[in-house]
Image (cartoon, rainbow, N blue to C red; front, side, top):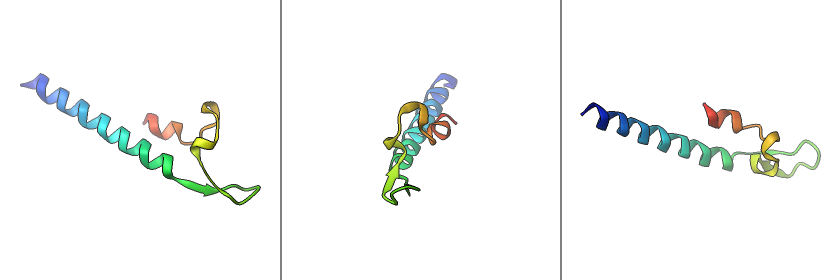
Length: 56
C-alpha cells in the first residue's frame, strides 16, 4: 500500500513538473534590443533563464 502511494506521489510530481515546463515555454517577454516577443526557447540550453525554475 505504501509503495502504491509513493508511486502515485511520484507520478503527480512529474505531472506538475511537465505542466510547469509547458507554461514556462509559453512565457514571453520583449527583447530589450528589438522589442519582439521572445521566450526561453530562443536561447541555447546554457543560456536559458527558466531552466533553473524547472529543476525545482
